[in-house]
Length: 143
Image 1 (tube, rainbow, N blue to C red):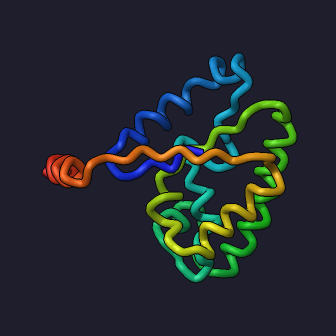
Image 2: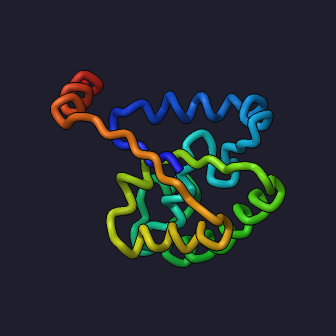
């Protein structure tokens, strides 16, 4: 699971993963489709506090906490089906929203609870960038 941080190339990584299905499959990897492509935002949409309706959830059509609760069940089933269909492959996730949007212990626990029954092990990869360089990059992007 790649969780990225702002301005560390997550978009480029996700674009490559999104178009590399053939190469990944040959090496026994699978970039998760159920979690949403190209950037697996359904992970944070599922794990975040159900009371928070943000832009990520709105893009999933989730407008109320009840929508979020129903989505959690539907998404968990879709994810389980994908993992079962691709048994034996290493499933790759990439979503910087797992870093920036899941900000409480409860939200991180919800993500853990989603993935734990499906995988023997989850390895988290995060790229860190010096904060002065992040600020410079954010400034130049804003121009």
